[in-house]
Length: 374
Image (cartoon, rainbow, N blue to C red; front, side, top):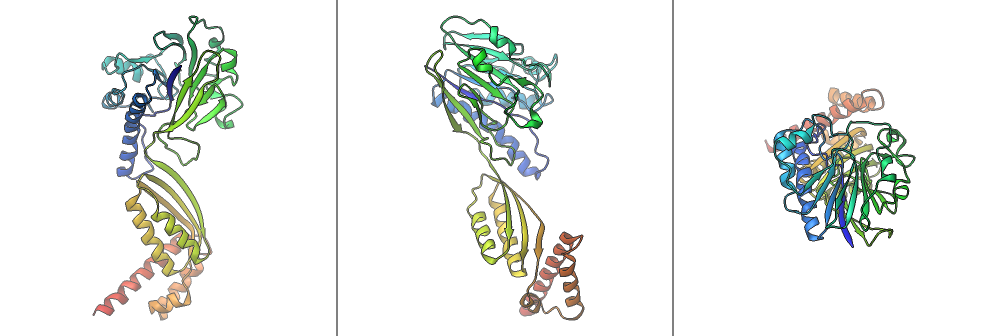
């Protein structure tokens, strides 16, 4: 029986410009440490090879240091690594791959298919049919030749490609780099390892996307895994088992606050978040001044605990109760300002009005606290 790991879309060198610099650096570093975990898993599971189905690098312009660090991260697994370029790191005449060769960064056990060809691994018992991208986009199916490719008798036939399976994936990515949905059957493949779709996806029992091993989007699509594949023999269906290797877990929450119990439940969920969380939180509804203080404290504590927490409060209205206003001792002109800000939250500029109201309430509380200490 042949045992392999299937992974893809490492996107080494990816930048995270939407995040704070500290978080962006940690998320970029996680992509390299995940490769170390893949190598460790390959050793633990005693696989015969690791297949990487394209987009190893996020761009052709990654630094020499990043190239060296990537291949260093792979070193603990000394069996065959078999890679193809994808659309982000296509095998152009001058590419990240030609730079890696000049740097002598690629170990002897790392096999990179820069042209379509059959690579035979007789010792491991399989022949690999590679369909690398030699340009960023193509509108012809680069796996067509798999159907007529000859391989040595007795070797399992495994395909490795990067692109969009036609008629299966989302419509907005269903044109560049097309792959026929029945390629595995037509080419008599025992397994077809695909890259480009960043989530885990089964096309048929012999055709899979592994997804990116380190999540980088707020989508619940099975990212953060690799596939452990057992191939019992020629013509027999593979046994496919996802294995988690990702470090960070990206979540998007959309919550509406209407009653006090809604805030209580939200705070409890925030308190339970692990430190590996990357959270995008959108809140709507309304809260009073006391609840706003509690919410801000809970968000601040969660930001200190999570890898990253970003929140959008644009549709969350601050509605002080009469008791809130009375407790601020905001009589006269200040009372009129508070009333106007409360009214403006119902119109254009609501977010600015809410923030101004929160700041004013905070200043008034601070003044009262100082007066109490005097």
